[in-house]
Amino acid sequence: MKKWILFFLALSLLLPLPLLAEEDDLLIEEVIENVPVQEAASVYDSRGTALITITCTGDFTIGDSYGRSKSSIFAKALSSHNDDINFTLANTRNIFLQDQLTLVNFEGTLTETRNIPANKRENDFLFKISPSYVHVLKENGIEAVSLENNHVMDFGEEGYEDTKTALREAGVIYSNSTEMGICNVEGIQIAMMSYLCIDRYNKPVDGYNSLFEKVEADIRAIKEKYPILIISFHWGNELDYAPTENQIKMAHLAVDAGADLVIGHHSHRINPIEQYNGVYICYSLGNFCFSGNSRPKDMSSYIFQTRFRLSEGTILDRDFRIIPISISSREDRNDFIPTVETAPTRIDSMMTVLKTNGRKLQYAVSEYPTEWK
Image (cartoon, rainbow, N blue to C red; front, top):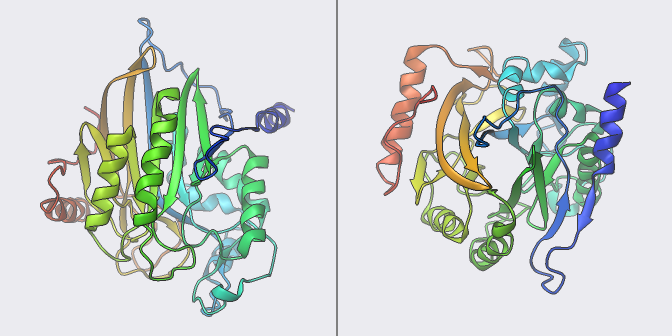
């Protein structure tokens, strides 16, 4: 009974509110309150100072591909786990349940439609899974998703709207370039916006020039209202281990406009982290739970966690750590179960990759702590 009460409470808090009615090209605010799945200690200490922990991952791609590849690898894995999709998060669930907000890049669709847009029919990968599996997110501590990537439109507007409906009904916060997600943590509002810097249909177009002005205007319009603002970008080149000049320009622009955290994904590879004007920029968190390939050449990745210490809505300080992971619990193939990495040699190799590629960045962090200070 308690679960049903929480479910209907979450639905009742979906309140679309116009933010800038006179500017159609700017964002529309949609408020989805965060309803905790379990009791947790207060984020406030005796002095009224709050400590907010936020967890971010890279690509969360579940479901089968219906493109030319005709892949059924995920369906076979799901069947082998008695159709219990929670198997995917069995080894990371405890991490997500211990923070105040977990944000992933949801790269796929939650839909039953079979209608594939004409401009997607030649694609190798089109991802979808039944909306009935949306529960895997909230039940495993994932409160929010970014919905700006090149697979959310795999089944057109119908599939995209089905996906958003499934997320809303499950009480999962989402954000895109026109809808803002908000997580409310004991009165502290965390706002999220997401942007796609490549074409939704993967055409070779430069999406940056049209977004530089929009991103800056959006952030400046909302920043004063929210103590913490997270901006997610789907950008860069696939398989790259470092950001492009346009990514760096966009990230710095977002921070200068007021972003408190910048999260990136798309390359399927880990990228270094910058701290620019005090704000962390994760250019790519690589893959997380990724059903697009049974044997990726690189299965290393990391979970990013940051803590904000606030007093009366003002950020006093912040720190971060990474949790090295493999996207699989097996070494020989991808079984779609992200698992914390424990092998020192593989962790050292990951650190070397991050630090080596960070030499190209002016504001790259010098160390990648795996424990809190």
